Every structure is written in C-alpha cells, then in structure tokens.
Length: 184
Length: 184
Image 1: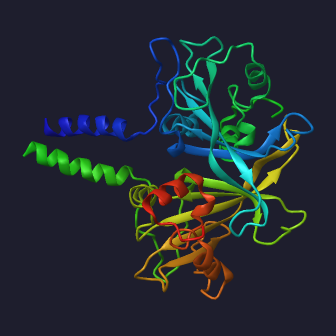
Image 2: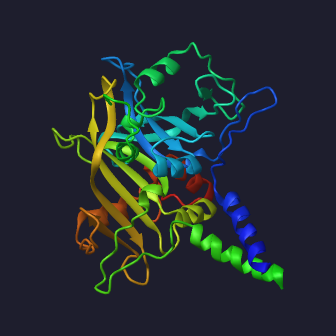
Image 3: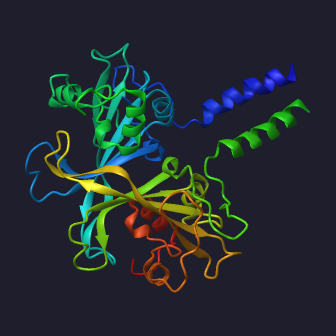
C-alpha cells in the first residue's frame, strides 16, 4: 500500500515539475493566456531577419527565438510530431551590432518586442492549430484564420503545419520518424 | 512516518528530474565529459557572427546558442550570479540564407560545428572557471589558461567572467541584484 501511495505521489509530482502543461490555458471568453514560463521551455532554434521575401524590412534587424513546451517536446522526440495541447512560442528581440566588446556580427539585446504562440488544440480550432500574438502579458484573441500565417504554415510547414525545417535538432528526429512533408 | 518517507522520496525525485546536475563530470584523467543533455538546458541567447574585431571571418556565417544547466540557472535567478558547479554550453551552427521558403535573413541549419563549455569549479581551477572545447562527444582536455578566452572573459565578462551583457534575460536579473561589473 505504501508503495502504491508513493507511486501516485511520484506521478503527481512529475506533473507538477513538468513546467509545460499539455493543455493550453484560456480565459472564459476564449482568449489564450500568456504562457508565463515559455522562456524556460525547450529552445528549438533562432533566426535573424528571416523572410520569404528577397529583402526583409530595411532598418529593422531582429532575432526570433522559438521554444516548445517541455511535454510537447518530449512527445515530438518520441514520435516525430506534435501531440494535442502543444504550445510553441516565438519571441522577437532586437539585434544589435556594436555593444560592449562586440564590433561585428549581431547579438540579442533589450526587452522582447513581442511573443507569438502557436497552439494545437484539435477540439477547439478548425485545422487543429491557432495563432495568438502577445504585445504584453494580457490574454490574446486568436488571429483570424484568414491571416497569411495559417496558409503559409499549412502549405510549407515541414511537420504538421510547423516549420521544423528551421529547427535542426527536430528535423533530424522527424526524418527518422518519416514525418517530414515530402519536398522539405 | 509516511509523511516523512514521502518527503524524502520527493527530494530524491526532484534531484533525478533536475536535468542539470550541479557537479561537472570528469574522467579519472581530469578531462571534462561531454554534457549530453545540454540542448535541453535553459537557453540564454544566440548571436550571429559575433566578433570583437571590426570584421568577422569572411565566407563563414555562424550562429552560437548558449545554454545554462537548469540548476545553475535557477541559482542565478535567485542571486544574480553563478554557483560553484555551473556549466554553460555554447554550440555553433551554420547560418543559411536560402532554404525552403526563406529568401533573406538567416536560419540555423545542419549539425553542430562544435560545443564549448565553461565550467565553474573553484576547488579544481585557478581563477574558478575553465574552458573546454568539444568537436564530438569525447571527453575534452581543459583549454590552457594562457588562451585569450580566459583573459577576455575575466576582463570583459559582465558577471563573474561570463558575458551576461549578451544574455538579455539574465542581464536584467543581474542588474536587480547589483552583480554587474561597473561599465557593462
């Protein structure tokens, strides 16, 4: 009996210590709550001024950092794709060239300029996934499904509408599982 | 009694689930073992082609991603500086411009081109910290203390010989704790 109780305790504790719950949190009005702990999730990759246009925005230079909630990440490592409840967060930060001893190249500086979250919740969203943009930490309304992000992710995302082709560690896992969209 | 047993179990479990042990692992010859789990540690920041020279290496474009072991990170959040046993890992990856739908800017691609580890172990290393470079996953010999990395980190690292000035989330924590070197 004691063994059983300890077992249950351990399971409960494992759920508490898993910093990324597998269920997204919404307000009663259906807004997504800001994912407070995202900066301590699993880092997927970063990019600088990435654009599907030949020229990005002149005069703006920005890094993006992408994170997966730990529970979703662990499931991806096992299966090569995302479970229901997945939360991915992309934060944008200014890119600085000259600062401290740095003279060339770029580093990340200052506060975040915004956080976008991609949520997989097949019971709630048509197509399974939805996007939310956060300026601060207030709950966010879903970006309308007519926005370009939906069609672009659906048409070009290497795995389940996500841009795994830009996340080197996940790409090799997905290739092993055969879950990469043909052509990516 | 049952409560006490459960408490001990929980402590043991917390130590198991903490993926970043606070003590670096060495071989009997004093080489540092490769930190297998570093890619799931806490992400600090990334940079592109950062250099303290006016021009970086022409023809090479690389991102670096820096990670802190979770136990050291949590201590930094509490105190604004690094505990003994801290492990920081920097991985280098190729920067690609054209690929998939990306037409401008850069994303990370391919395998790591190397991992460097910065270890705080005041009982073992003069000055408290040591550097190790890994090409693969074989244990690594300490980089000699005559190398530039030691003097540069000592002279210019914002917090305890580390370049916290390039890690935005840690920099604001260190400023709150008053642990930033004057001038940085």
